[in-house]
Image (cartoon, rainbow, N blue to C red):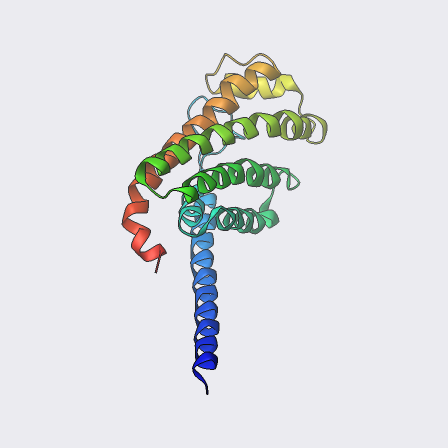
Length: 209
């Protein structure tokens, strides 16, 4: 075997190993995301249909270590696994994928250009802003219409749900978006970002092996 052929064989093996490593890491992070998605819970002053979970942590770790599209793939796998147990006709999973996927993709894209601690913090801030905007759009055009038209809930029922948990600021669609979905996504973005900033540095050597 010539030196050129040997070099080509080594390159092929290196690519195959890199692909196998990527698949393994993505699979492990997806599994953690799936588990965390099921460990959801309610927040104070938030209606019962709005759940908080930490599933974006593995997705962000994947986006930072292997690129934004890997993070989006983890989000997709996470929501795909949730479909058999959906109570919203798959609308909730679609919305979660788009909203949380926008967070992960935006953060991963910004971080990818310059991998420093300051850049990571900036990327998470931008990701939180993007997620909040997408959250407003998705809830206005998809989620709320679905609940009111398909699930048989009118706006008064949704307002009652928020009042029942002590949030009396919601009186219509505009205030529902402003005082429920906006603060929810900002809070989620902040909490998830703080955790990622702490754990990514420690896990980075493992994620980059």
